[in-house]
Image (cartoon, rainbow, N blue to C red; front, top):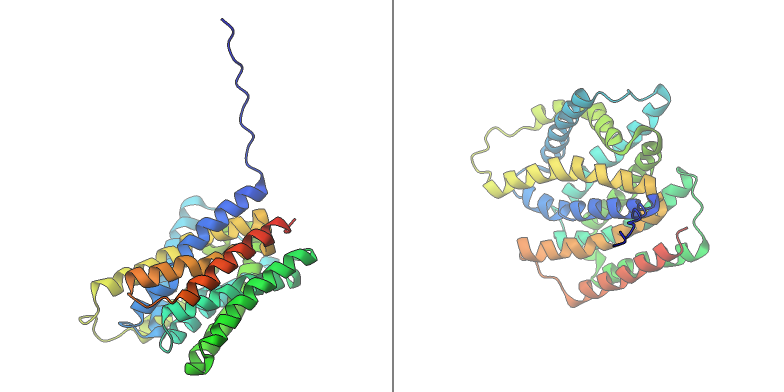
Length: 298
């Protein structure tokens, strides 16, 4: 009886692994805004920003001590400062402030602009040159999000909307800079070193801004603080930076167009916020744009 030879299955290409890692990161990040919305009901936004970064930085320091990766070169310190300013301080603080004025469902819609911001900084900072067809789908997805936001009346909460737009800009820069650095330093090392770099400032702010009492803080608020500290600030970036480095910053960055879909589902399920048919329609449309952007991202 002949034995059938079993050929080894071909390994996934770096591009495919990049999209898989990126998708895992997006799913993790999708819970950030709903969790932040719940947390700011109990914590001051400034304290929340400092506390989540401090907790994540302490965990990052433990990982660096345990695995002892090579230290970043002096030439990489500037990029690490940009990452820390963008995703450790800027985005968490600006979104926490914005969520005092808008609902998490409303703020999640703005996340549809993140792929475009990331792609622009991928060109400016990462040296990438996506083809014209890619830009068409990226711009189309962003235009759909902006059009929906305008139809809902941005003047209803101009301060919250402006803070969200600023958050998108600094986050896109932090994503692109971190992904570029991940190519040489490694995905998990980038976010860990950036967190440790910001630890002295964040730990000091945590002590200064700490409320006199936590008696009124609910268990759900503590769980939300734990989520944004562990998952949003650390674990999510391990997958996200690795995915961007493997599959291309501009290309894999388009997966962020899916983040509103996951986030809206969480906002409706956990916070019982109203999700309109228009929100769902925009989300489905931008999902189609992800497919188009991926098709022409090579």
